[in-house]
Image 1: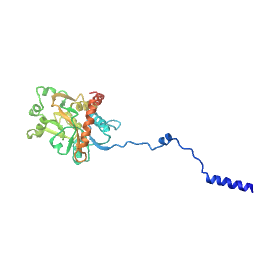
Image 2 (image 1 turned 180 degrees about the vertical axis):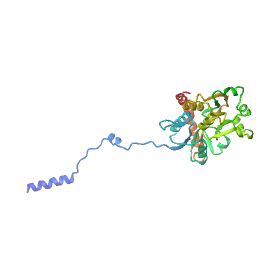
Image 3 (image 1 turned 90 degrees about the vertical axis):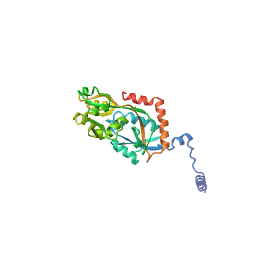
Image 4 (image 1 turned 45 degrees about the horizontal axis):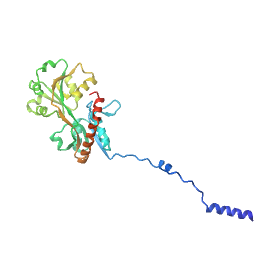
Length: 273
């Protein structure tokens, strides 16, 4: 009987008194909390074409270049994520107009483009040089302008939809020079046409032209002439179809910071310029 009573008392104790679990320290609870992941507040499709050293795909398939790094620094400060889209300049402009591309860098401002795009504040200047075949520089020694070059009957290669400044635009759109103007989709095609003697000179950004010549080992065939265009301002360009003006204002604020704190100068210096 005593044994039976003891068993009942033990069962009662076990049933009535739940096991005590030591409380988990607060710090341990906090450590086990789900880590907070910072989610970008916006996502932008940034279009680019092969235009070293400003924008290009490197050997590791990473999008690089002066303009690209500038855009990356500014948009990161804005909390935006970039998605890169590579195409020809003509295709990229069409994408901005349609809203399938949100943003371009290295863009000139024109009245036509302002009808479908917003522009940031200026962040650099750009001028174009006339590149000619090596050994033929003497032919153009007396020329002072591109107008002198085409007036003498020489053929000029340009990239379609590039804006070279008002003076060059007047030449390329003039009916008097249409037989002398040859348009190409990309800069490399113009370079090939120059070497093949299809044109007598090509217009290219000085840095881009020298970079192409160096990378392709063409210094024996192509050289920069003394003829160049007046420097013009360069901007970032945003689609009116997919981007609002508030984002442009924020971009301009962060762009000013990148210039003021020396980041942009550091980017340019890394490319040896």
